Length: 396
Image 1 (cartoon, rainbow, N blue to C red):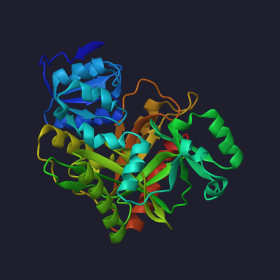
Image 2: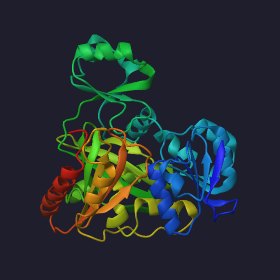
Image 3: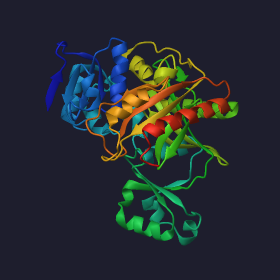
């Protein structure tokens, strides 16, 4: 384990510590710097995205307890880049009040099994699901209640299409069961939906909840391609999503930023997944809102009263820029330069050391002017085409 400090920073203690050093940690660090807060990051390499902006880097695996202890010794409050943490080990360190959200609040959300059980216990609509272990014990009659296709999901670590597999036939399922450890996967009914929506919000220490506009997310090969904000004008739909969000964070006494992904269609509004952190679907908030999702998390965790959240424009489109093949004819530097020349572009490069196929390398946001949802959607399509002509999606 090694340490890196910025040359001009000699202080020992830091306002915020972040477990993780990827692009979410980078944008959290940038938000903290705007609040004149000093940040320490625990990550595997000083070359990780947040390393270049942090005041202090503890170069250690975020899952290793030795690095966690060092981070706690350096920082007043600890926040999380993602939910891939070891709750039991962190509980052994002591000083549990240092974590935001609390370990008790985040514990039911760190894997899909515990998420699903929470949602079921609260009687919130979600796709029918079952662990593969329990699925194997079903009778033939019970198995017939499940129709193909099915969705298999890993219990932990799923993101950007990883940990999801479509099961099209009984033969697919049989092969899948042979190849995979049943304790690590669940089966979910296949949902035909009209839209995928996401809602990100924050809850502060007083229990006040603030919301970003619900957005529509557009996926390609299970990876978010682009996001339209706001995603819907339907009052009842917005209200239902807000009520679900509020019920969950209040039930958990959750403090921080949280995201919920939804399916919406003939079955109504169903929870797909919960992410106890900042989320790709709300990156647009950096330019389009009075306070970004990263600013909300930084303020809440450091004791600053978070600002109210309002859109400062009619709408926004955020487009993910994923890594392309090595032989792509235009270099990443040239692509970034070409995109920057599009009027109204706001580009966020993550500073990753290598462009790898499918890896999130950057995102770009444009503010929209249309008063109506249909006008903003049409405007977004024009901008999406311009961006994809320069930087196509590797997912087609």
